[in-house]
Length: 187
Figure 1 (tube, rainbow, N blue to C red):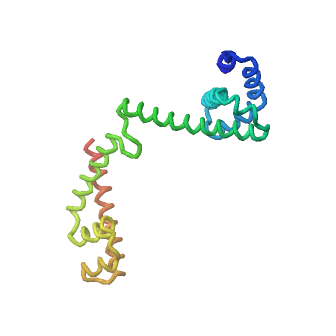
Figure 2 (cartoon, helix red, strand yellow):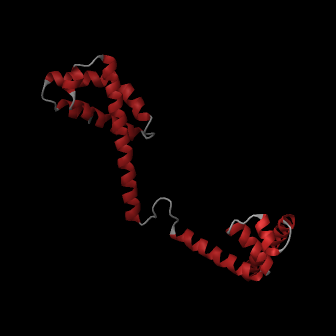
Figure 3 (tube, rainbow, N blue to C red):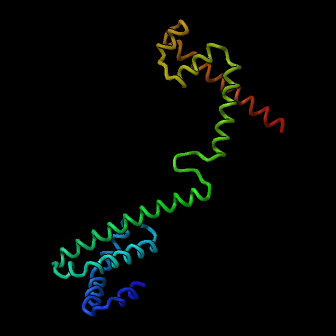
């Protein structure tokens, strides 16, 4: 593919220059592309696109020293690789939307259903707990209240709040385990 494109350059001098440039810097181009893409086919695509861009800059490249030309080639490959990654990300999002997959960061529908089921289960569990246990668990884990704040609400010391929280968690866990056992027995 690459040589087909290079062979289409009309000026023999330009064609020879690009071939020499490619031969001189091909490993540098591939190693630069490797920093951005792990897939060998993607690396080849990046290098080919870079050569196409360099073809358009033959006149600029001819007047450069070798080390400056090497830096120019590296920057070209880096920019092409970044564009390639952006394009791949956009394609991935378009394909995900077309396939009906959720956007990045959003849970899938089955995950939402499972979360809703857990929320219903927790709500039912909280209703079966005593008012003080409910206040402790909701205050601590939902509202983020400190032990001192919870102690003030319940009329007890902060050290007592920690012990009451431990007991409330154990009771809630025991109720959850019992519910799971009963649920499996029904099956």
